[in-house]
Image (cartoon, rainbow, N blue to C red; front, side):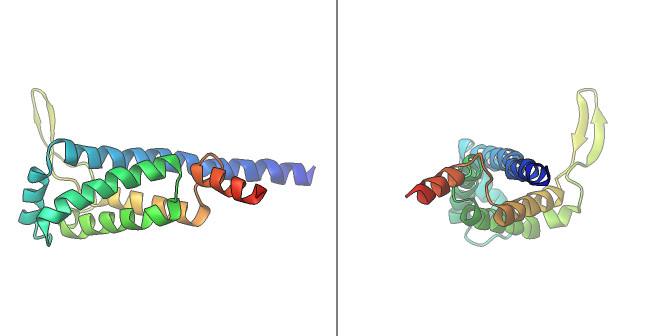
Length: 157
């Protein structure tokens, strides 16, 4: 009975990373795609205005890391490696842009007939993504991942 309970608990623990991976991966893909689909020129201007070094290169590298890294996290492939550049991009964004706007990611600054007006986001979201990625590094991608498939094939060989 105890072994059966432990086994069931272990299965649930192996499923838990799936939920983190899906939302974190999707979030990074959405942000990366938004920057690339509108053209990196606008993002480059924002980076230059905020003093980020090498804004032209960064305006391409950052969204590509977000898009491809997000896809890798979503699928659960090389999660521990992929999480590192994503954490780095979150730290750079937090300390170069969002830190100036405080903690809250949602700031209502006014109300119009069409609805609320929102101010620039703070670093709250960064502080949610970073521990989520660290959690995936520590726990692994979980049972429903490409990493798990790779590991099971290596074990059979």
